[in-house]
Length: 150
Image (cartoon, rainbow, N blue to C red; front, side, top):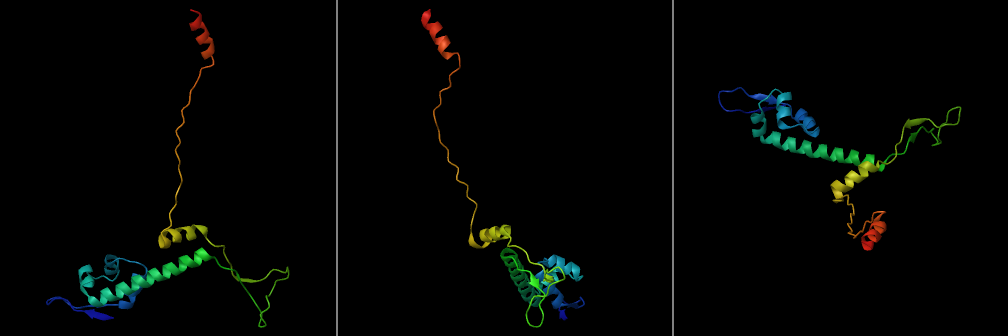
């Protein structure tokens, strides 16, 4: 807790900067944090300590989110229960006990990260070719012969 000094005539207010950090990691806005802590937004924004902790919380939140995205993109092998010798413990049917299920790499996340981090884009090659086409009606030759006969 730290007390934020306000202009004369107003009482000082206590701010829990640990809570500010946690909320900033969740990418809460200054307005949302102020509302949550029942403080004036301008009072918070004017505090250098708040600005520093808010910035650190946002950066750490981005780092945490990025780490989770990369884990999702990579996939994870299942974690199996092992005995003290490192052997996999199995049930009566011969199936291993799973401590934590695994999951396959997420290609959608890989594509999204490639676009965001590497500047990759979807490109569709559309070629346009113009060709002259003559369309003849099935009675074209018949009408031509009749015209020539007259």
